[in-house]
Image (cartoon, rainbow, N blue to C red; front, side, top):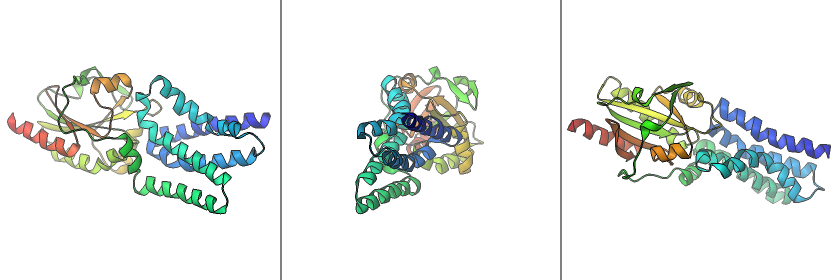
Length: 285
């Protein structure tokens, strides 16, 4: 019984402590990267150590940390935890291949190990496009007619709350990119965003802004650390993402870029198209 309690605590510590520290100290992308091999190894370890126990009890021990961190919060607020779904998927994939490894012959074990390595390769080198295609759908170029109320959202700069009016002036055209630290298409836009920001940095009439949507488990410093680590310097504000915010801004897929002037949204779509719309809007004024 003591052994089971120890393994249950270990399972909880892996997700609640270890992976949470990774999320806070680095970013969600790093947590996605290490989640699969972590749970692959942990699943094999538990099933080997408790080989004489029932499959259900062993599986519960392996997944209890996942249930606490990913399943239970989504029962109460699914939309707010959308941006951590890639990590959730990565953990489940690690568990599945760990089960395949444990119950297979040598060929199956080699296959499952290679699959985990392939997943690591996909995540690190190909930037997990498959996962992000599932979660970060492209918006149509035309903005919907729904009411977008950006002035009702709580914005932050580092650890300080700031008001909407301090971010968006009335007479300036803003290209505003919404992103998350777990979104690889968002991160791939960094060079273009930084280049565009520097191009317009001395122009009072058009500005580039970025707003990072934070998961409830993320530190406010994580997007700043990520952008600095990548070697870029474009401006960042942060917003804690939940159902209410999703309804206010009309965005639940990333990356999404808005063009704003006089607190009115003129465009919602890709960053590249937003640049053209912003310049046309500037020329009309």
